[in-house]
Image (tube, rainbow over all chains, first blue to last red; front, side):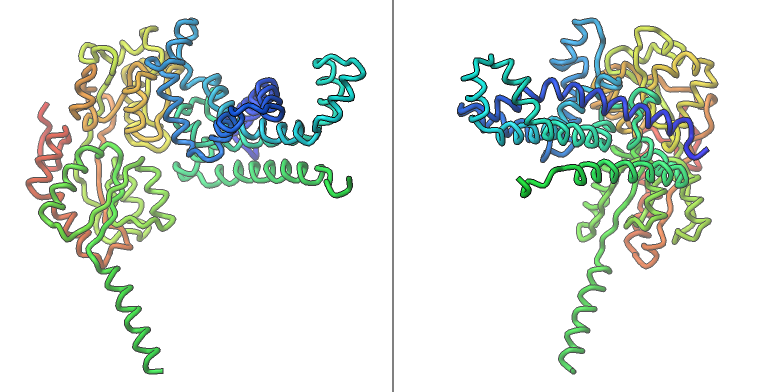
Length: 225
Length: 256
């Protein structure tokens, strides 16, 4: 067998994580992107900066804060314990929460750009045709911004797959729960299992290249317009 | 041409003198965190001209890194098997020397661990138990052995979380994210950790001995400071620090 059972488990887990995070961010990120694209409020700058923070913050900073916040003495930890679901570190859903923060800019920024490119005109036209704002959003904005959504989703998915530092800090390396591919490779290397590390790394390399190839090959050339 | 030669000579002299300057980098197993910090501080006080940097991590990781040419001059491993492997492959500049025997303890930050045994880890109130990764951290391997010998492995295994090294394992427990953990005695006796919860020594009859050893790496073959530091480790002040942190030293019998 090319990959061991543990490797396959890590791949399935990683794909699940990335899929769920992308779905959540589509729902959460769209209104944020819409607001950022349309607002004239002074809050646009600060909020935009907060959204972009994970781009520049070391994952260890994010991991450290999340570990304390989601732990039994942290605010998020208090809340989840009150809900009766325990604490989030070392759980799959803990990774989901962490990844939502970690990948937030990869969803919001491309979608925001797409919204900004649409401009005011199509919205005004729709309004004169008596379309409600909700109507306008789903029948005018969404189709026009579709390429942005696709780019954002692919980037979010791929970026979540590539996550390592945060997972190492809050994951606890549990098989089929928090042991994602990047951590599994790290373990192989530390245990000198280079053969395993090579095979799994090759899979990651091929996957990442294909994702980016899809993105760049398919992305329409703006100059044609 | 003469000038060029002279310039070249100066450059080479500058480079090689900086290589000769008294500086070493030590890769030390994470269980040595507190003890080695103290030893290095004392060493620097006695030798103010020398520069000693220490990096802590899992012994398995250092073993891998040294094979790939990591710039470490001394390697203090929590498992003597790693430096022995390196020596066998010609990557060492000294014989492998045992420097201590480590012990593992059961530790908790939220409950009184002095009253706990390995069997109490099966208690449903203990939701998460941290151990170091048995795949490449010696303390993790011994923790797994102890849990198996105590006959509780099957019950506690679903609750285990794995630290990258023994220090991260302690941090998982300290932050309260794991209710208990099996960590190094040398970390548990640190006042900061000992103030919380307390610990219970795990019988060393339950696991194979944690024989720890160090080696001077091949790259430090010509570095006298590496040898001086190695000698210092065998001296009285360093041994006293090691004993203080609960290590059993070679040539001495265990206190208990």
